[in-house]
Amino acid sequence: MKVFKFGGASVKDAEAVKNVATILKQYPDERIIVVVSAMGKTTNALEQLTNAFFYHNKNVETLLNEIKKYHFDIIEQLFPDKNHPIYNDVNNAFIELDWAIEGEPTHSYDHEYDQIVSIGELISTKIVSACLSEAGIANKWQDARDFIQTDNTHREGKINWELTQQLVNHSTSPLSPLHMERGKMEKIIVTQGFIGGTSENFTTTLGREGSDYTAAIIAYTMNAESVTIWKDVPGVLNADPKWFEKTQKLEQISYQDAIELAYYGATVIHPKTIKPLQNKKIPLYVKSFINPEEAGTVINDVQSSLPVPCFIFKINQVLASISPKDFSFIVEENLSDIFKLFAERHIKINMMQNSAISFSLCIDNDPYKLPELIKTLQKDYRVLYNEQLELITIRYYDQATIDRVTANKKILLEVKSRYTAQMVVKPASFM
Ligand code: ASP
Ligand code: MG
Image (cartoon, rainbow, N blue to C red; front, side):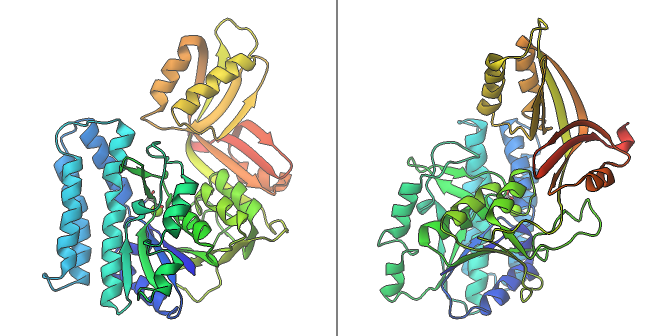
């Protein structure tokens, strides 16, 4: 049994959706669980819709209509027959969305977010499933919330592994091997990435780009032979071509390196994805949906280190330096205070450094979270901060590589460990 994950770009238009069928036809005899993300940039659009709804902006209607139009344009291209049941299916999903944004918000922002944003995956999977059927690939659409169980941490649902495992194994679960043994036909199951359910039947999400993680959870609980993430790049590259020239594709990566790269912000794979796979030694393939016959990259149980330095680049960073107002040293008690504030607000610290009188840290410039955090910190601390910065991480660095990527940039903070160097820099245009 294999798990395939198709991300937003791989289902962004009618052609792309058809291509999913073309790829699956290459595996006629396999049992495959197909995990699908929301189409194209739908999650971003639904995030905007959530903001408009929650903060009472006027453009709710416009945003909603754009999302509907985008999906129905694709459906019309895929299913010229307007009586096809997919029209009804997707309409029903949109009715759920209408309900979610009706009246006043009744729960926290994060809770409302999950109910709204999850619709993207529910719709994309309906469309993919119908398109596969149309192409002659028997498949079953499966609601991921029926087996991916999380706690109540909205937007960052923590998996209840025990319950999820039980639900996957349960005799009535279409995922269960028993289902196949009983002679049920569908070798292909289509389900949503990114979303889960709580014991009170609310929807949660697993964090942005969480569909990879869903694929890993399914693979882990079902002891899959492999996971394949189908992407618009030929595999895992040593740097993002958006920022770096002359990137190289990596043939093979150890689980450890993949975890480190994802942790530091390489966007190819969601950071939580690797660990479950590593625990069961399930290989993860990253392959191109444009050239599916190419080898791509495999992440597996090798011991070797990477043959070339890897670069991770993050823009829109803020460097904050926090010091006690009374000019005393910064001590453990202060650090514990500070970390608590970050943890409560789910703000990730991308890099940090401590000195006698101040604690410096680099974070994403989140317009929703940052101003309030700084205000709270300022009650007890002096906070200096610098915006519009970049964070460069180099795994397997050497001085020459550091010099090359920081040329024309001013290094504000630098942290090095044995294999990894991180620098917060001010780009030339802002100096
Ligand atoms: N659709 C979600 C997102 O864009 C999950 C994913 O694509 O992995 O973040
Ligand atoms: Mg995505």
